[in-house]
Length: 218
Image (cartoon, rainbow, N blue to C red; front, side):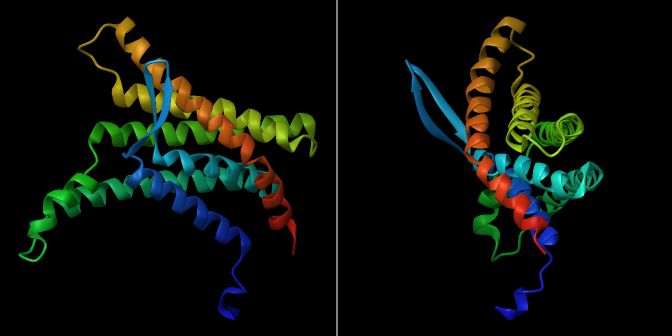
């Protein structure tokens, strides 16, 4: 364990951020049932467990190191997603060896993300995280170091709404359907998913306080 004692705290936190980012991108296509409201089924992506963590890390790093540091990390994350998409296209386009042939179809279905979903993911990620940083930074200038719980949750609520709305709209808007039909369908996805993210953000608020204290501690 001594070999891990000299790991820099910020490096570890950034590594966790990148882990959550990769998990959301590679595994987020799987959905699971949440329950029903009347006869309306509610489902969520497995990425719901890591996306609120990413927004919490945003706020922890901003609180300790400032908004510019976090913007750099978000932009780096954007590049990582883009590179991941490009490599997925390369890896799935190469012919399989005899040994890999039996698993080729499954491999392609897992790693070959559609261009539309990838673009939606890229735009939603960059827009929402930069918005989260901007709101948190503005609230911090007004409130100072007080009210971290308010700054954390308010910035998360707003940014995660845009993250959810942008991704779901770009990914699932059907050009063959009317605006009204699309609106009803998309709102039925966006609102429950966003509310669940908000709930998880509230639950994770103590982790933000703990993360700030841990990161500041020498």
